[in-house]
Length: 424
Image (cartoon, rainbow, N blue to C red):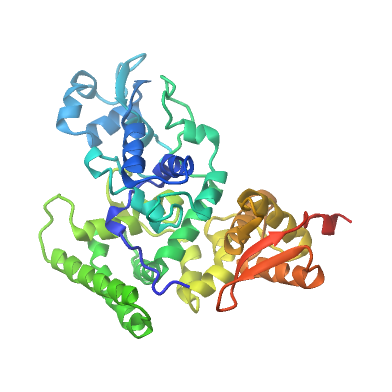
């Protein structure tokens, strides 16, 4: 259990979650990596030039997003009214510009810049996809990649197809990807998100990022007050102090007139807003403007989180019910073995190590995602674990657990296919 569930480096997080796909894939290629390898590979992938047919949506993107210097290179095109004489006009643009201009994306902001290459991998670390230090793939990252299609990774590859218009847009997220990522955000930043979104749900009108960023200092101080006495190590105390320092810095910026440049307020609030637009739990009426609106989906997912006894309780007992409502999946709550065991076996086969062990939380999470998105049934993580405990009591030779020093289940190993138990 985490001491506090707060992102360690929120200001270093990217905005579009789709950029995690090439980054995590790169981390999976070798046992060890470094910050430079991951960051620079990502920038090189998304900034490669491609030839595309100009569309009205791309023309609009060029006018709104690109810098003056970049726009001048396409002056003849951007000077025309939208949609006028665009037939068969081809231009050269960065791959990420083409992907971000897509009309299906709920937000067209978040272009990556070369000078920030060292910041982008930190989101993958905070979400538990990549290991700190070695920048190698964690089991959560393995789960994520198992939900990413080869065509999505190929969309960032070298060489890319010369004509990318109409091809798969890897910045778009599928429902399984959304469920895994929102779980990772709740697990890593739940203490902040619970209080932050409670304030947002009270907002009947749209709101700007800088406006709600002013909520963070008070939220951070509430978390500090509730958890200071629970600190058990020097690292815990250091996290508390850093959080307090950040709260003070953000508060100073709330009293400063915006200059248009990056500041600690914007860098801290953006990762709590933009990713949730991608996930589908916030609306952005204008995809080019940092203004947001709470939706029915926001309320359906966040209210159970707010009302939960704790973040751990929500994760274990309410996550899939909340996602079923928030994402309108219309799944049925089923806790019978015929529902749970096949999904667990499928997840276990994806995640098991060469020695046959897999983290039980990751297996239960991935199994829950499979069940609700493929079979239309949902069960909670605690219910999946209860099913395995019951099975282990009956067939101890079939299911083996590892536990930590507090007696919490950590890893599971199967000696045979557990689906066979329900096929007889």
